[in-house]
Image 1: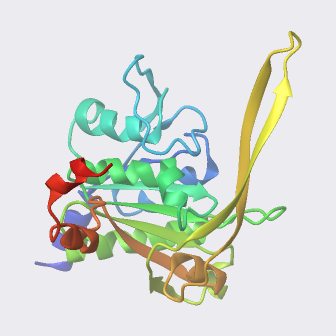
Image 2: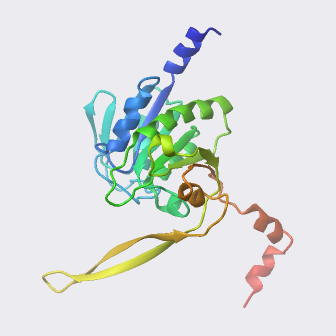
Image 3: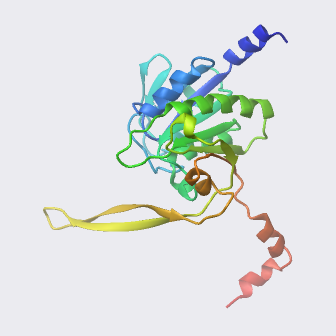
Amino acid sequence: MTVLGLAVKIRAMRILLTNDDGINAEGIRVLAEELEKEFEVYVVAPDQERSASSHSITFRQPLWCQEVKPGWCAVSGTSVDCVNLAVNGILKNRPNLVISGINRGVNIGCDIFYSGTVAGAREAGILGLPAFAVSVEYVQNQKIDYRPAAKFAAKFVHFVKQHNYANRIIFNVNLPALPGEKIKGARFTRQGIRIYESKVLEREDPRGNKYYWLNGEACGGHQIPDSDIVAIQEGYISITPLKLDFTDYEMLSELKKLDPEAVAEID
């Protein structure tokens, strides 16, 4: 194939973008601008911030979808709603790849269970599409520069397509809060174990009814050498492959040595 032919093939690649920070977030704008240099890009994202929405999907109320500009649609739902609606409804052609991000703040360790950003990529994986989530570390009182993450995401698109990984595998990509030239490189990592300081704040409304704010933030993590947490701490980009199958096969192998009928006999 000629170089020109290859370029045409790449440009025909359709990429769907979503996030959980909302369609007006800087991260998704910068990502779209970078990817549009090379690919066909569509944006379907929540109409407002939906952070920590996890894999929530809207069933009991309708979804509203508004085209805010050509190729950009705002949806009154979560990132999971956006991917599902885009793939199964509003896009004329199925995307070749889904990218969720760029998120304001890393999604490492157990964040992946809370994150709407990771969930957007996960929903794409469930639908049989290659996908990855991309996030950038947030440091208080420091403005995030999304350009290094956008440039890396564009390169990572080629990596994912070149290797053609099996369905039901998605990638979770995180970048440290460093200028592009100071990032040391990239590491393939495992999901780490993050420690959270959770708080429940009790308040009272004017009628004396109690209500609560759930709050909390990460306050550290286990220093596992090959984890996403350590990679970010040491100034590297973290790339973690995530399986959609949560089965613990090692435990399952041990359980199969037992009689499952015996479980019902336990007093």
